[in-house]
Image 1 (cartoon, each protein chain N blue to C red):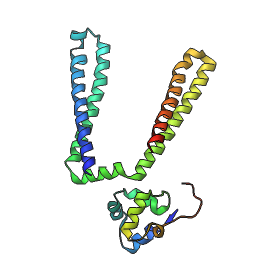
Image 2 (cartoon, rainbow over the protein chains, first blue to last red):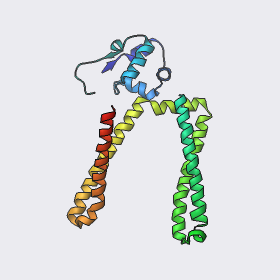
Image 3 (cartoon, rainbow over the protein chains, first blue to last red):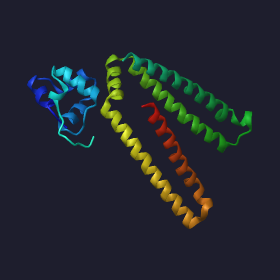
Image 4 (tube, each protein chain N blue to C red):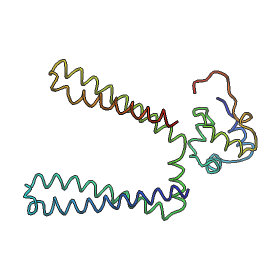
Length: 68
Length: 147
């Protein structure tokens, strides 16, 4: 699953640590999300979407059949 | 965050209890073991080692929890580390893989010992393997009903 976290974070000049603090996760989780190595839970996806003021569908791009 | 603070307080109470147990154990078995129970030096040292280990563990844990509770920044860091979903996922996956590896090793040991050293030698790994397999399935069915 792809996401626009890095793109939106950079556009808003937010550091990974600031985003991690806002979402109550570690910076490593943000790095893994941005690299596409980790898929966020529904709760974290919701929090991230709320942080950027967009919907989950706009932030995360589901590409059909994926190994979840 | 308040829940986490309360959890840490409960944990520190538990470690304090273990600290008291360890000090009592050292006193009773290591220092006065000979006089009270007539233990020999070897046995006293063994008990001393066990309770000494418990003493170090509980002291370090109490000190760590105390430092964390006294510093809001550290408390938040620990809270995030313990609730971070990626960390929790890693913990679950690594525990599951470790358990599977242990079970495979036990099964191989069980077969090897049964083939070359007879069934008596294979009893311990056999019981351990089937015991773990049984417990794993009981726990699995518990969570199956719970979720």
